[in-house]
Length: 378
Image (cartoon, rainbow, N blue to C red):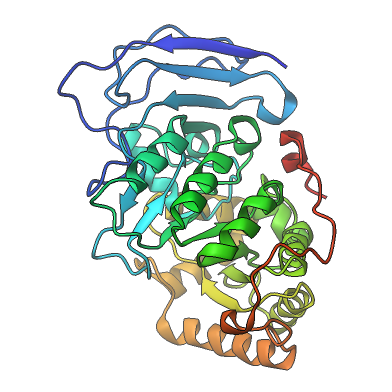
C-alpha cells in the first residue's frame, strides 16, 4: 500500500478557526489541494485557512480508498458544544472526521462540507478531513478545569467508525482518554470496526455510563445497496448489536432513516423490527428521512435518476420543508412501537440498575478487523 503525499503550507496568522472550535459551526475556510483523479498530487494551493499549521493532503492507492482524498489537519479543539437551538438531547460531541465514505445519499450532514468550499455531493463522500491530533486534544480538554464531565456523543454528524478509521485509528486513543477520565459517552455507528475497540468499551462501562447504538434504517438489502453504498450491510450491523449485547453492553438501534415510499411499508417495517429484536437490541428508535439543504438536493437528484415516479410524491409530502408532516412521522412511530412490543425488543436486556459491571465475557472477543474489512458489503 502506498500513500501519495502533498504538504500544504500553514495558513496565515489571524485566519479563521480550524473546524471543531467551541461555539462555532464545525467548519470554515477553504481546503488545500485535492489531488488528481488518479491519485497523483495536484499543484500546491494558496495557503488554506482551514489549517492551523502545516497539514498534509494524501491519497491512498489501494482499491478501497481509490478516488478519495484525506486532509490531515491539526484541530484547535475537538470537544464541540452543540448549538442551543439544536433538537438533539446532548450538549457536547466529538467528531474526529469531516465528510464520510459511507456515501449515504440522504446524509443530513452533507451541507457541512460547503463550509469548507467543498460540495455537498461527491466531495462529501470522497474528501475526508482527518483531525489527526484528536486523541491528544480529547485528553487535554477532559483534563481542563473548565470541563464538567458532561456526556459526550460521537457519531452524530459523521461516522467515527467509517472506512478511514481503519487507517488512522483515532478512536482507541479517544476512548482511552474518556475511560481514564471516567467521562460518560455514547456512540452511534454503521461501522463494524467498533468491535475492534470492544475491550475499551467494556472497561468504560465498568466505571461510567456508555450508550451504544447502531443505525439500521431498513433490513432490505437491495435498498441498502442503493442508498448506503459505502456501509456494511444491515445484517452485519445487526451482528455488531448482537455481539455487543452478548458481552453485556447495552446496544440499541436507530431505525433511521425510514425512507417514505421505499422502506415504510408494513411488511418492511415488520421485517426490520423483527431482525432488530433478534439481535438483542435494548430499544429501537425510528426516525423519518429529513431533507435539509445539501442533503435535499443530492437525494432528490438520486431519486429522479432511480425512482422518477416518486419525485412528485416527495414534493407533495415534503413541499419546501426539511421534515415530513407530523402525522406521517407519528404513524411510523406508532407502527414501530407496536412492532417492538410484539417482538419484545429489549425484553431480554436488564436495565442498567440491575446489571453487574465486570469483565466476564460470555463469548470470545472477535479479533480486530483490518481496514479493508469495512469494505466487505455482503
